[in-house]
Amino acid sequence: MDKIKKDFTFIMHLIPKVLQTLLNISLVFLAIILSLLLIKELIIFSQILIEKGSDDYKLFLANILIFFLYFEFITMIVKYFKEEYHFPIRYFIYIGITALVRIIIVDHDLPVNTLLYSLAILVLIVGYFVMNLTPRERPGSNWFFKK
Figure 1 (cartoon, rainbow, N blue to C red):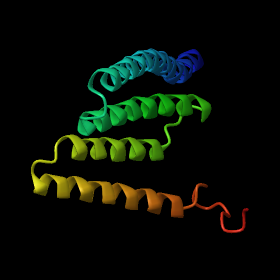
Figure 2 (tube, rainbow, N blue to C red):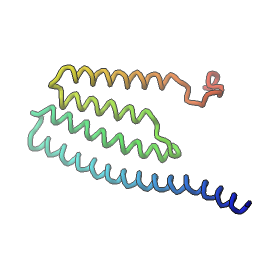
Figure 3 (cartoon, helix red, strand yellow):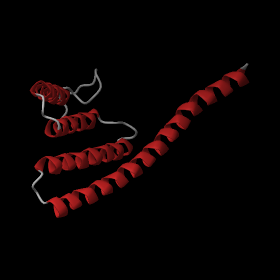
Figure 4 (tube, helix red, strand yellow):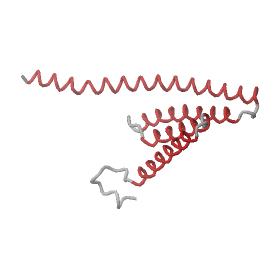
């Protein structure tokens, strides 16, 4: 009976480690793919500057924001590994705000949609503000007196 219990305990400790390793390998591959797409976006961005000049400002701004979306995703993956396998929620908020700004710039034909996108950005900003007001320590810790 003890052997079965030890085997079960070993398996229960092994499964999270295997899944964490699989996740880490997948994120490294994703970071490589995003880096290649970031380089591709730089090439497209330079072609727009050389060929079309600065006449089409909507295309110019849309490509800059796409570049920043790739950049933010890569930064989020780097932070994941630096912060011991934890995704900071603020990076998801940054990505959401950047994506919504890009949508407003590219597709602003319907005023109602633009207003809704703007309200969504406001909600994300308020959420970020509230998140920064709350303590970073876990509940029950003495966060008020820490400097």
